[in-house]
Image (cartoon, rainbow, N blue to C red; front, side):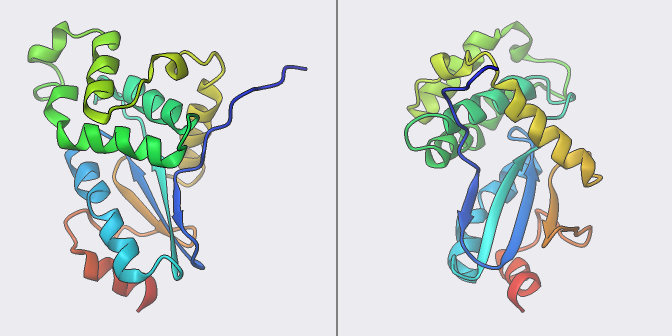
Length: 185
């Protein structure tokens, strides 16, 4: 039996009874819009009333999605856990175009290597990722996120669930107040 010396910190904030899950692909513009609203959601709804969970939804048409998702999950294994992962997500969100392709198939990122992507993530987040990125069995955490999404019928981002039920009536374009009303009335 193999023992693991690392543990990914769940990307969970708040401690309330209402659970809001956001399935996000970090380079998706709509996921970025959602990510940028999550702190305000927790503040307005109350971290004692809701729990916010980020589920990473890697998508193949975002061509560096796998590298970026692995980097975020790698960051969650480091000191600071979920807050360190959040720094990496914030770095992607603030510089999304540097991690994406033009129309998903072209542009300057065609000549970028995975190591260069990791370097950009490190520069924008201030988090040294290379060692954690190389954790041999980190893929089990990535697979958990994929499996969880598929078990819930989720294939695209952003997708939202409240208390385990997918909410097709929610959008990244909604204002935070709309989300608060759906969560706590």
